[in-house]
Length: 264
Ligand SMILES: [Fe+2]
Image (tube, rainbow, N blue to C red):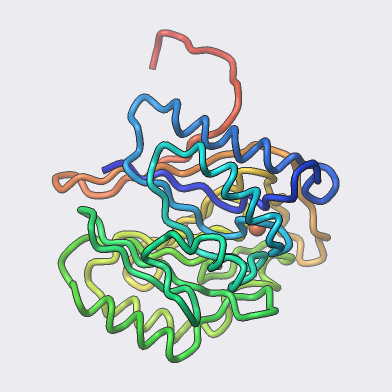
């Protein structure tokens, strides 16, 4: 099974640029075209939050218009820039999304089990899942302790070292860690939010964050560093799973590069 992951497209209404500088809508279309042009078509597309920038219905209308071009089934979770009810309304045709409450879900009809978590408290930019959500996660994980399972949540459950991102990190991570550590079959925890690729061993599994299709948050580790981003390099993640070899994750950059050359 090949799983493509796009993240943080920050779609805007038609004709509006993200942060006044980046054509996030065009870039999302380019990311979809990139996924479609791979030499093996992914079986599934995951989108790990911040589908839009301001949570507005006209932004979600644009997301759906752009996603109409997708030739791959997709699963979505919200990010801190999404609006829970507008998100739910925009994706009302997605049968796995609950009709009320936080947007936690489980999709069981693939060789890999997918669990989506809503780590976005209303009106906040940091990440957190309340006790009820964690109890749901514990129950859901306990229902199948053998099939390889991928968890998705927007906020990575660790300190990145980038000060302006850590202000909005996942808070009170220990309770989530305890629930995930109790499950023996979580292959990967997939996140967005940090607009960069990061990896961390955590809770007996591996956390992997995905680049944004729109802007890259700069890698600055000085505690006083001000928020800063660049347009590019953009990318997506590809997670290749089979029963014999397990899960291998690749970064796939979006854009034109020199080559190809006939050597490896
Ligand atoms: Fe984002």
